[in-house]
Image (cartoon, rainbow, N blue to C red; front, side, top):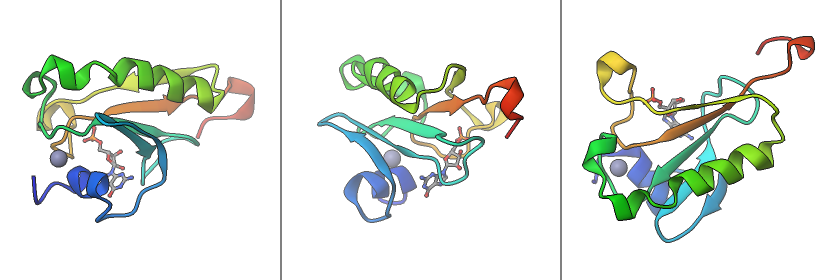
Length: 109
Ligand code: 5GP
Ligand code: ZN
C-alpha cells in the first residue's frame, strides 16, 4: 500500500534498523522504543488488522518473534499486537511488538 510507512520500510523507501528479513517477514527496531531493544515484527503482506492477513502470510511471525526475543537477551519481555484506534494501534500495518522489560534492579525504562 503506497501510503503505508511500514510498506515503505519493507521497500527500503524509509530507512530502518533491520534485525531479520525473509520472503514474508521483516523485523526492525522501533523508532520510539519503550525500552532498549524494542522491536517490531511484521508480515510483508499489507493488512491493517490481524484478521486481514492470510494465515500463510503469518506463518513465520511467531518463530521470528521468538528469535528476536531470544536474541535480545531479555529475561522479561512483552509481546504486544494492537488492532484498531481504541486498542492504541497507530500504524495500520499489522505488527507485533517485542518489548524487553529491564530487571527491577536495573530500574524501569
Ligand atoms: P502501534 O501503536 O500501532 O501498535 O505501534 C506503532 C509503532 O510503530 C510505535 O511504537 C512507533 O514508535 C513505531 N513507528 C512508527 N513509525 C515508525 C517508523 O517510521 N519507523 C520505525 N522503526 N518505527 C515506527
Ligand atoms: Zn503496509
